[in-house]
Image (cartoon, rainbow, N blue to C red):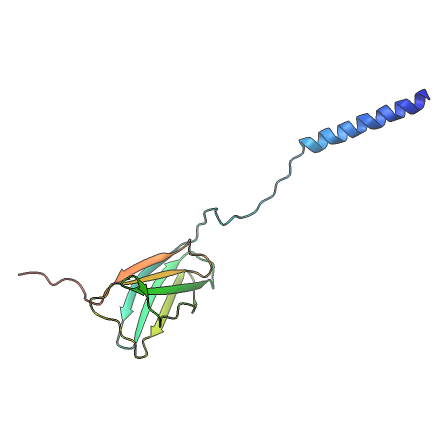
Length: 140
């Protein structure tokens, strides 16, 4: 029986060694959380308004073909006819968004603000304020 108890002790020690080794090993898992900062960015460089269309353009470090969504506000209220669900795709670090005015008119004296961001991620965004009044006239 003495041999049987030695086998039991050996098994016990083997289990301890396995548990010790398992406790010392490290497991690393990498996951990207939405809270982690990214190097992605977007800017709005300018706007052109004509009688028939409005065009915004900008630069970005977004991946190629990222869908850029825009929202246009007039005096802090969203413009109902603005195609806020239409994508403009980033290409070679640039993007451009054209909207036909089709009977809609932008008003002089109204403060407009455009927001641009990748679809589904408003944490990366750009804002561009403009009005149609032009620069102030210098006094004489």
